[in-house]
Image (tube, rainbow, N blue to C red):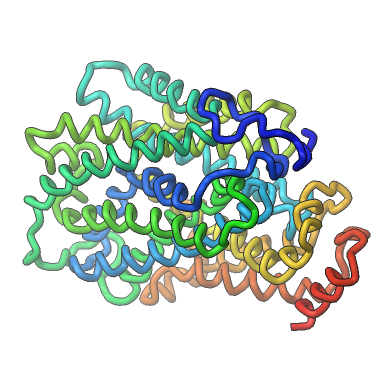
Length: 477
């Protein structure tokens, strides 16, 4: 796709009646619009879903008290939300999706593997997880086959995603108000089930209390947010370039944290009861006679978040060179995700936990490398920081190997049904250390490899004297 020039008149602007015309190219100046506060409602609505409450349900399984569970949710959510906010701010500066930004440290083709493994799989997987919960909720209201409900919900989500950026922002703005009201009512009903004097669960199935359980449960919410980070810039790239990075980061982090703390906290408060049931069954029991309203809330909450995932999945397909339009990319992502939903319908609860864990282990080193590269190198390149993202001569760069190293080293600490690292069980008392080791390993590898010559010729192009001096001064730090 060609890059429109900044001198052109806006063909899309803030219109809600036009289908978004842009794909993965840099958004031209003429199309830049919006206010950072839109990021708050976007990410607030995106996280007002049953999956977040389900995450809180695991608190009892970790043998945590109510206070321990709530503080773990707060710590993990806040840490992840801050990372999310900083990445979203980069989107406004560079004007490209998060997926494309990976080309800076990874190289044009080196970026293919992480995008294929992380963003495409994430988009399909998260849409499937949320849609499964939505269909199960829908089935409590109407007697329909699972596949019928899934197709209807996927069709609606896909239409929103195809229409694009402006409509998704508008839907999430409306959803923020509607879902806040509905979940406030669900919160009131759910709190009637809370027993603050309940004893610790001595038969906890995951960990037996202590700092290890607290850190692992906090890491669970950190992981939840981090699986969103490969899409952080997808909905901030239209903001004016001169917008404050801090404002974008604050609104993004704020919207994410408030919704995560709200629903995750409710999940913790009722975890001793709800954790014994499936997600939809638990919510139905918690809301009693008002269960139909709760089920409608679950279905409605799925639409905006899944539209965002399908949108991000389409951009990911374009990023790795799949020769389709953005609209076709949405359709492809939706169809593949539907297949996953049909497979996971029998065990959404267990599948959810395993899926979240494995994905986050790979995402954390990836986002680490992106942040390191932007703040230590590419932001000092000015316009060339965006231009190099479309330079195919930068085939593979050292950041790709830093990500591989970060993932490989952290795998020694993984604890999943697929793979248990050799250090996972001996260090279990300290919780899940895979995220921390992934960040540390990727950081060390990145800066060590930065000392080596670029793998591609003229990786930074012909720099001006000011750009070259700025970049040299940063490199020497």
